[in-house]
Figure (cartoon, rainbow, N blue to C red):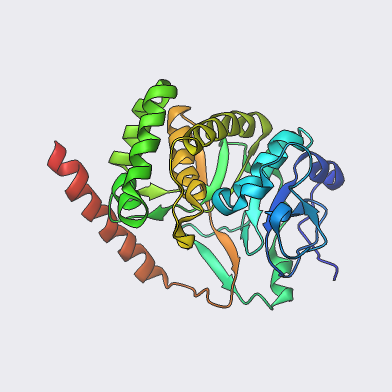
Amino acid sequence: MQLPHQKFSHQENVAENAPVYVSYFNPFFIFRHPQYVPVQAGKASAAIDLNIKGENTGDNISAQNYIYSELTVLYWVWKNGPKTDYVGFCHYRRFFDVLNKEKYPLPYKAFSEDDESAYLQIPAIDFNDILRDCDLVMPINVVMTHSLRRNYERNHYAEHYKALEKTIREDFPEYCESFRAVLEQTNRLPPYNMFLTRWDCFDRYCTFLFAVLQKLQSQIRLPEDSGQHRIFGYMSERLLAVFIHHHKLRAKECPLFVFNQRAKKKSKPIYYIGNMIKNLNFRQKYIWRST
């Protein structure tokens, strides 16, 4: 179907120099738009072919998708994609709602995955405009009740966190201060490995991210639990926050469109009261007690 999108001058040129790559791994409605590039993640070992571009050509880590998750698409674009002025990443069921004008937006607006008409609301992205006063756009952060370190140790493997901390300390000492500040003193997580930014920022981030993860991969034992396999997908969400802090990037949070039968809208009062409680709880545990 034809999708009427936001129009701005030189739209074809913008689409060519500012692609947004969309990760797919299972049968789903393929969103078609000149600016959005669908890519099948994990295609090297996939049981199905989605008949879209795969990240299994050129220099790639497609076969390791089970531990890297959507990061295999980031790696493939970084190594093989055209070095465009801007670049963005989202998922088959998560897209940036960059035109949202609400002063206090919710993290996402939910739609059924079968509601094809809802895709009409996904706008073309004018990177020059949205990055006018920031360096990077990411989803509205998830607020935890604990520090990011404690959250990781409670929900994943504590020994993997220790190995990550050791890798940062020994091989990337310039990031140590930011690593501690973010993981031990904050409770806000940029989720989903989604962002919109300039290519030079993306290049610096991938240089840091994959150097850390590939170093770590040789030092840890991968979990047998299939729910924990995507270890580097979990770690990268934390490392993006570290990268932002270390380079003092101006980051802007943006709500999402989510297409999922199970997705439910949260009422604003409940959402904001919940976040206030989480932040107060965090400050009491990790900030007030340490001063």
